[in-house]
Length: 240
Image 1 (cartoon, rainbow, N blue to C red):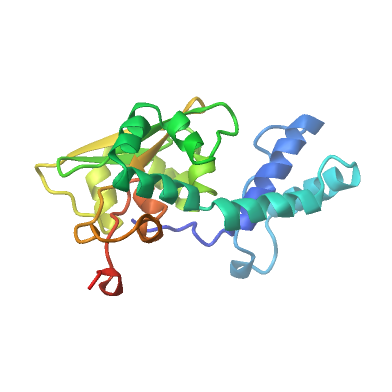
Image 2 (cartoon, rainbow, N blue to C red):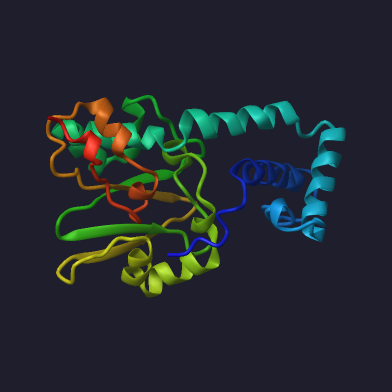
């Protein structure tokens, strides 16, 4: 699937989201702050971008937003969380059958065993991909997403084309992502909400039996935990 909005920076997205939330507290209208467009693609900022910058400056001046705190939040999600937490959960499930059973039964509790905690009290559900079932995650209403496991959501996940087409034509969308699903495989689309967030336990790739847990975690990608990619072994990752 094409990703027309991937040019929007992750740092800009999170800062905008944070300032937008603070703006609601300060009395601004919800939804007034949106991710600014890629400044490299236009010389003059849009009206919306200018409003976001003005709102952020106002909130900083009033002491409602601390730019240093925003930078720390962004750094945490970009460099410490990212998809790394989810990858560790997946790798543990691949090497530990008992953990996998607990993960599929109660993902929130199982992830806490590895030190990862929910931020908003939301329920987190793990969906297992198998040779006969392929799960795919979307949020048709907004962009609900398992941040504690996957970090920042990709911009395409929030785009209207993905949110609508993932439900209408999931096989077609997956094909555009490079994932061809056989006709005998059932595709299940799961719609995240503010109360329930889903993430996919992808199939362990063939040939990875001799890899340790750390090496397995390095194979797992964010997209594979959304169901829009498979986990594969590169030529240099196949043990001799």
